[in-house]
Figure 1 (cartoon, rainbow, N blue to C red):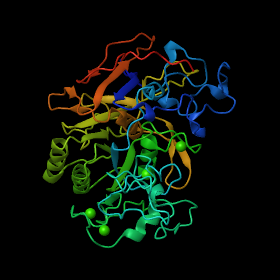
Figure 2 (cartoon, protein in one colour):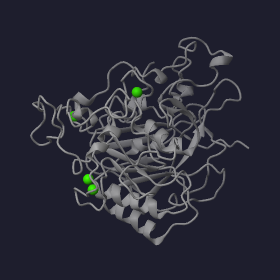
Figure 3 (tube, rainbow, N blue to C red):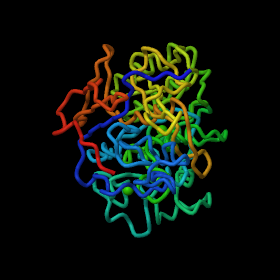
Figure 4 (tube, protein in one colour):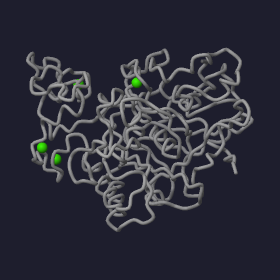
Length: 429
Ligand SMILES: [Ca+2]
Ligand SMILES: [Ca+2]
Ligand SMILES: [Ca+2]
Ligand SMILES: [Ca+2]
């Protein structure tokens, strides 16, 4: 049975305080999977081959196979949000999942690195562009990532990938907890399952890698995907797969994220019970102003998984395009998505992302919607269910588009200064 979610979420726009230097390029990003499929470029009328949405339709404010049509909005309107912000590298989204291929071509430059465990880069020519306040940022581009070790003779392309990546930094694993945070060699994340500092997907699972791509794949780099938050950074905690029998690993991940000063915890995890320790860990993260989100899971059930039902974890369901004929709406409830009053937000599923190996593939499920919802970063929800902002968050707006295209009321508003115009005009394609 397919159920249309009344007032389903179609448009999401979020604004953070940003400088003009962080503005997105005026043209659409050049990542090849972002574009409509070949043969379906606008303004051609839809053909049977182009009846389904193509490209990263889930990020768009329009139907990618046809000219803009106010009645046919598609995804979360990231293309409109990017006019306001593309995120900031000091906003790190921590993915608690199956581990990550942090060497993936579209992720390797987006992996957060721990200054407390890694030495200051020392290329032969020095770091003349590094800011005094952050000597780790050797090339002075405003972010500390693997590219800052280019030319450092102690860091080689040891895995033969043709580029520096996180795997090449294993040379700095020294068996010591250099920053005394309780985690040995947490160079860029932790493995809470195997209790070490390497969150690589050692069991070959690709789920965690896919969630990373949705959130913050390197964008406008001519490769693969655009990420919803192009300048955000990524950290990972390997817990298990999507089903977690030992939720203590999730709790450890929440504590690590909070203690590391990160902003957002992103989960697509399910567990039928939660320990006192795990409950306390999310209380701890909340008190450290960490926003946690979890997919509702794909059981097409009212069943409530932990950690979704925690008061301070946002529960994310999924919507999909209506494909019974040529697409007329994107507002169908995914007939896999769990449902119930505990859901806070729904977001689009069935979209391309990074695969666990070296390539890309489509992914479906509430975890996709959950990954897209991290655009709500720095938003907070207190125990009364009221949303509020913190720090540089200026405003966030979720609009719902009814099936006939008319706008319904905003469902959440965040406090703090509002953007000059939060009814962002629909961008022409
Ligand atoms: Ca840098
Ligand atoms: Ca450490
Ligand atoms: Ca160490
Ligand atoms: Ca890309």
